[in-house]
Amino acid sequence: MKGQYLAVESVLTLGMGLVVAIGTVSAFSSYRSGVLDMAGERQVDIIEAELASAVYSLEGVESGELEVKLPEDIGGQGYQIVFDDGIKILVNNQEYVTELEHFSDKEFQGSVEGGPVKVFKSGDQFTLGAD
Image 1: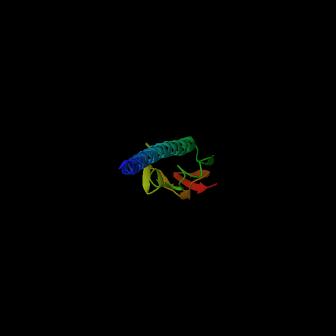
Image 2 (image 1 turned 60 degrees about the horizontal axis):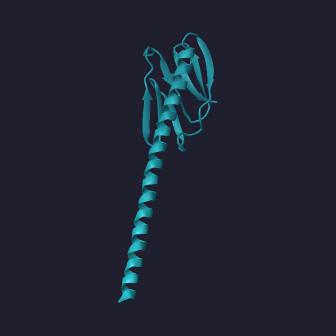
Image 3 (image 1 turned 60 degrees about the vertical axis):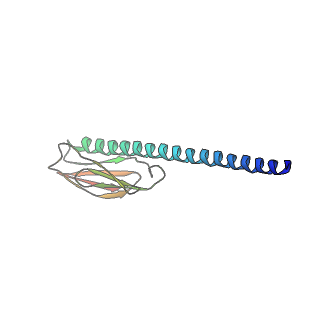
């Protein structure tokens, strides 16, 4: 009889240990995913600000170009930047849009993959190109 109790106790101890281990791994994975999402959103904000700064810097000249150093990826994912009535960043099936105030009479065009880019201005037209 004592052997049966010992076997049941061992199985229960093993089962509880597995439940705790799986719970810990699951909680850590969720936490890690949340941190990566927040870091990715922060990177998107920085990229949008860098591009907006380049557009505002070129506002006062008739024609010119600026090189903007941007990361190759966001949170380990590739991304695309689109100039289309503002700045759009497409990453991981999500779209982030930044409207550029006071530029409704200007034309924006161009689309590039993540990484260093150039912003060109000619008259009322801003063009995004790869570096």
